[in-house]
Length: 129
Image (cartoon, rainbow, N blue to C red; front, side, top):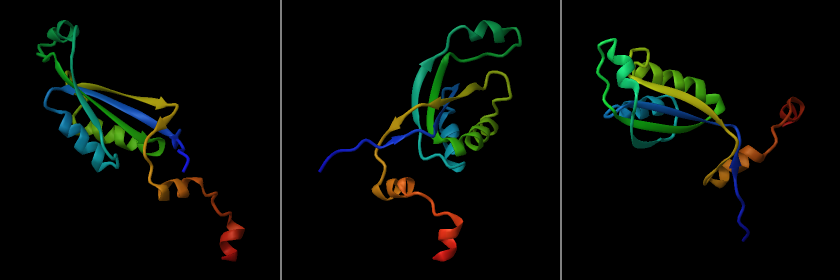
């Protein structure tokens, strides 16, 4: 049996950087909006303390970075849900961006591959069934 690579091309990467301890809230909001999962890793921020210190806001240098791969059609909905859930409109809460991915390869169940590769029926064919 030959091995085939299933490549997804209609996908986006949402990256959200938040204060340590807030990543679970990001993931929960994303999953409620339709995301399947996320990757979380720790990071250390540099330089932002000086700029926000003027506003009297103390920013912890310890960060959590959440990366979520989603379909293009879901991306805006998930992005907005995360933004609202973790209050990114407030100073010092975090930063989020979206990146278009050229190619993604992972396991895709055979029944999903069949749905994605079967050409849709046109209206005439549908009416004849």
